[in-house]
Length: 131
Image (cartoon, rainbow, N blue to C red; front, side):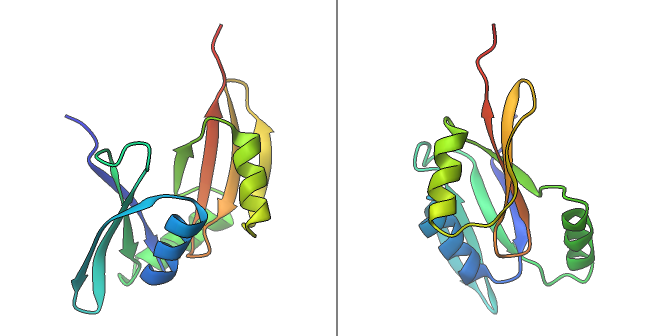
C-alpha cells in the first residue's frame, strides 16, 4: 500500500492552482472540469509520477468551520518537505508569501508555516541529518 493522493480544501480552486504552481513551484497534473468545480491535482516537479496533491473545493458545510478552527489554533493542514528550508523561506518571502511561523528549529527538523491564501496553513520542513 502507498499514498497516491492527499490534499487540502481550498476556497477558490483557480487561485489555489496559481499559488501552488506559480508560487510554490508544483506542476499541474490534472485539471478536469466537473460542473461548477474541477478535479485539480498538482505534483512535485522532482517526482511527477509521485503522490498527487488535490485542491479540493471547500463547499461542504463542515469544511470551513473545521479548517478555520485548526487554522486559528495554528495547526497546518499539511506539510511539505524541502532540502533547504532557509533558502525556500527566503524565496517565498521574496515572492510575497506570508509566514505565520518563521523557520524554527525543532530538534530533528526545522519548520516554517505559511498561509496558502486559500484558507490553509501549510508547513514546510527540512529534515536535519541524523548522527
